[in-house]
Length: 251
Image 1 (cartoon, one colour):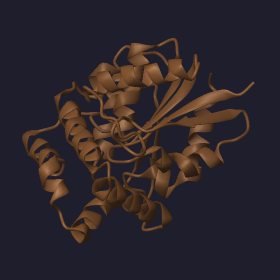
Image 2 (cartoon, rainbow, N blue to C red):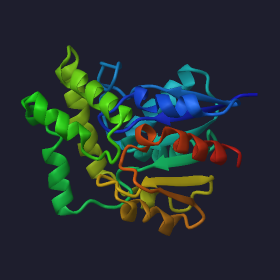
Image 3 (cartoon, rainbow, N blue to C red):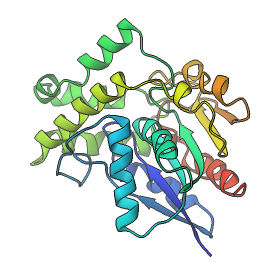
């Protein structure tokens, strides 16, 4: 019997960011990835973009697909939403893999200003394409096909016919993330199998921030990928798939 592995993409990304991981998962694990509202091919925006609201939206998508339980893996923003989903529906989340999750620790004043500045719809929409390409590539430590594909999809989303929805989703997701309590506090007291996967060169969700979750869940499995940045599903998809499959064997 196949087990569903739900794959939640990161900030400014899409379900396509998980393609390499999905292809590398072993038989018996059935990947399911879809775009958050306003991202990728889901042009219709959502009313609220805080992690809890997005988790409720994800739960609705699972209901629509008749998916009762799943191993859940979330990257970046998707990691923060995945953590909230585990709290919202603990009997439906069999195990949780957080890949460079944003919001693991509280954001200080300087970081808050940085995130706000890089996500304002009016600013991003007016940014020249050459500068936008550079911004989209920030956070990668591996300059390979994964980075090139992510940048190309990002440019298309921010300049195409659904650009307004994409820019609105980006801005409101960041605002919701900054206002939410840190994931390290939210996961305190949870019991489900937990994997923390981070890149050693990640500037957006530094290992020291992700490691704060271990204060709440010292039993969590910790994996740091050397030479990998923020986008492990795109930079090292086979490694990520291997770790997720190992997690799935625990349930």
